[in-house]
Amino acid sequence: MPVIVNDYELSDAEMAQELAARDEQEPDLQAAMTTLVLRRLLLEQAQQLDLAEADEDVRIEALLQHEVHAPVPDEEECRRHYQAAPERFTVGALAEVSHILFQVTEGVDLEALRLHAESVLAELLAQPQRFAALAAANSNCPSGAHGGSLGQITRGTCVPEFEKAVFSAQAGSILPRLVESRFGLHIVQLGRKSDGEALPFEAVRENIAWALQRASFDRAVRQYLQLLVGRARISGIDLPGAGTPLVQ
Image (cartoon, rainbow, N blue to C red):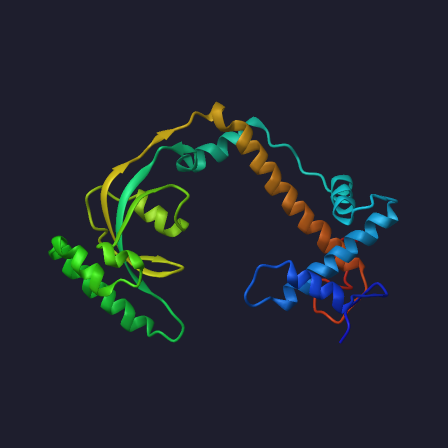
C-alpha cells in the first residue's frame, strides 16, 4: 500500500535512500517510513511559510528555529540539576574492574542462568582468590581469558547500569549481588578505585544550561511534529494522532 501525505505519495526511491542512510543490519521499515512522513510534513510547512532555502535540511532547520522555541533555563534550575546528580560532574574517577559475564542470549533459560551465576558468586564470596580461574571457566566475555580483567574504567565508558554499580561499590571487594545489564548478569570485582574530583557549579553551568535547553527544544520539536501529524491527511502507515488534531 502506498504511503500518501496530504496528496503526496512517497516513492520507493525515497524509501531506498532513507534505508541506505541508516547504519542497521536489519532496517526498521516502520521507523524509516515514519521519518519520511515527518520530513515531508516539515517541508510542506516550510513551503507554506515561504522558507526557500535550496537545501532541504537547511530549510527544515530554519523552520524549526522559526516555529519551535525552548525557554532558557535559569540559575536555580541549573543548580538543581547539578545537585541532583553530582557524579555527572566529577572528573578523574576510575576503578580497576574485573567481571564474569553470564550472557543473556536468545532462547537461554534465564532462571537456570541466574541460579548458575548466583552459585558462582557464592563460591567467590567464600573464596575470592579463585576469581581468575572461575572467570576463565564461566565468563562469556573475552576478558575471561585474562582473569576477567577489564583494566581501569572511567565514567562514561561502560553501560550506565554497570557503571553505577562499580562506582557505588567499595574498593577491593567483590560485589555481594549480581549486576544486571543489557548484556546479561555480571559478577564484579573491584581493585583500586578513585572517586575523582567534583567540578564546581560555576565551571559547568554553561554546559548544564545548554543541555537543559537542548532537551527542552527536543521535547518542543516532538510536540510540534505531533501537531503537524494531527493536522495532516496520512494513509498507508499507522501514526498515532494522524487525522486527529492534538491542539484545537
